[in-house]
Image (tube, rainbow, N blue to C red):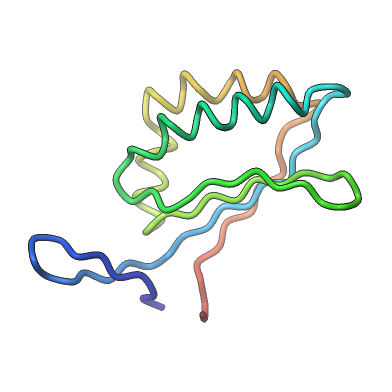
Length: 110
């Protein structure tokens, strides 16, 4: 479903919204450092074409989740395969007690 419109060169272009959700487990005492890393890494990743948002969530039960929204799967893959992402990503994993559990989605309705 085409749900996002962006004005490019005077014309509106539709995109298929792509969402990646990752459940993450942080090491004890790592939350503050991870939040700092997350905010700093957002500054670099948000400049990629197609980037919509990237959020770090904490549930009332103490679990954590990352939600990344891109205009399309293709723009997400371009960002994910970039040298900038390769440089940023390992630092985030250093705060985790295990690998993130990822799922990807396209928006079916809004």
